[in-house]
Figure 1 (cartoon, helix red, strand yellow):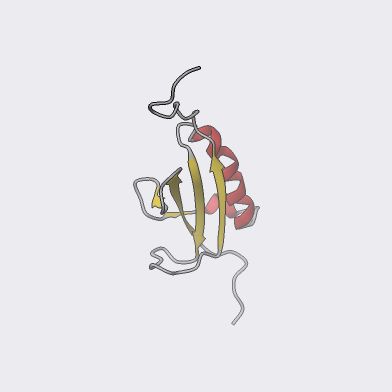
Figure 2: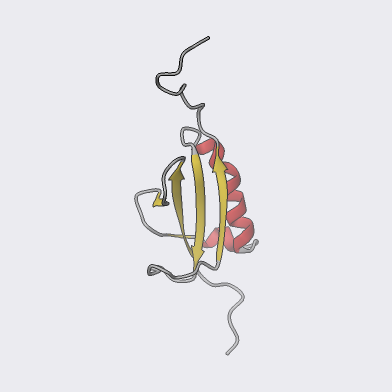
Length: 104
């Protein structure tokens, strides 16, 4: 069976703050649908990369790793591999000095 040239995708953002062991879902919804118009003229990877290029400016108060995962199903179960994923660093604000550190 031939697959259509276009198909729906769903995405989620996950964030791991510096020092945290695991990623947590970022946002009110666990998974969001990629807007149909977003994929009209570009492939999923181009849309996803553009979204992540804006992330450091939009999430400038966060420091850690941001992970974008895209799926072909609206409710991926634990262990479902994404069809596309990419991780970026969020530099966030400068960390405060270590507590108890003496100034010289």
